[in-house]
Amino acid sequence: MCSRKFPELCSGLFLLIILTVCIMPVQAQTGSVSIAYRGNGGYNVGDSVIFDGRNTVGNMTVITVTGPGLPAAGVPPYNLTGTAGTGNIVVTDSSGTWSYVWDSSRAVGADILYTAGYRFTVYDLSNPQIKATASIFLRQPEFYATITPNPAVLNDYIQVTGKVESAADTIEIDVMDASGNKVHTFASPVSAGGYFQYGFHVDMPPGVYTVSISSPSLSNSLTETLTIVASNINLTSSETVSTAPVSLPETTMTGTPAVPQATPAPSPNSGTLVISSVPAGASVYLDSALVGTSPVTLNGVTTGTHLVEIKSPGYLTVSMDVVVSENSPTEISPEMVKAPFGLPLSPLVAIGGCLGAAALVIAARKK
Image 1 (tube, rainbow, N blue to C red):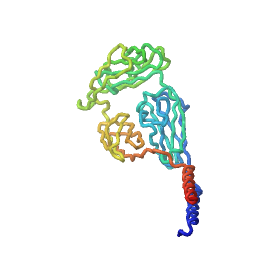
Image 2: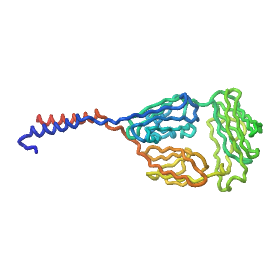
Image 3: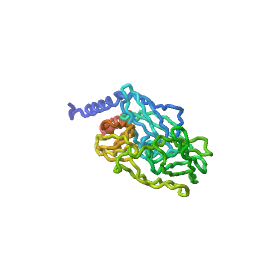
Image 4: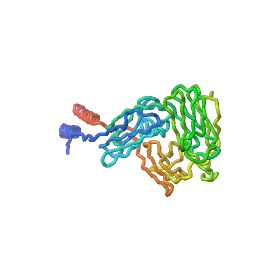
């Protein structure tokens, strides 16, 4: 032990210990993260883009997107209005490979996407300084449209609503049966801002119909599918939903007005989806619509694939595609990961701190 008789020796030993710890090699995290996209890098807003890559650092990869109108720190691709600096989790398999499908049509806030370039960044969850980026180009299609309700039944009021990106005065709506025969042809005016909306009552027998939307001034046409089902197939009248009127930026349009009305539940095939999370109390979104907080049991969910998002302050958003079946309840219970609030301490910063401590010891010896 040091003695009061040898103060120089004591301080010298302490200085030696500090310098030894500081000079010891700092173990750097090894590995890398990569990202690539499939295709030529140009996509329409509404397309699905497949990203994949490798993460040899850890087994959890985070993906973010940034671009015009989005925070520079990035947001989750499936929630473009989400918290800056957060992203969606992508699970990496045992070989270090990950894959991620981004359906831009299902992203919250997809209406803010421009015709522009967007940058996607991936990084290891535990080591956010190890990252990679890839850029793609998104473009708004010439025009797009939605048909509601769909499926529909006899006498339902169908609304065809959309927007034309190029100059057009009118659009033509052709409804064709399975044999390709036109059963209806409608013409809808287009507002000065490019918006259109047309409504008509269903008078066709049950079946699958093709709705072709086009304009003489546009080179491409848009094709959608409309399903008409027999009214007695639908569930009881208690299982109805209210269709809200569509609010458009332009109010100078003419033509058949679209009015809200109650319509039967769209699908005769449904299942149960049970969603919980760790921690509980997180906000649960089904196909971008808030459906409650975890744990929650959703009955009457249409069978097929749905986007489930689970969000909680301080945690990374969980985003996954879940297949709901008719036979048995589908249950998911992901464990949420806390969002990283800062980067790990770099070796230079650590060494700098040690040298500072050594300087204090030397100064004390001189007193």
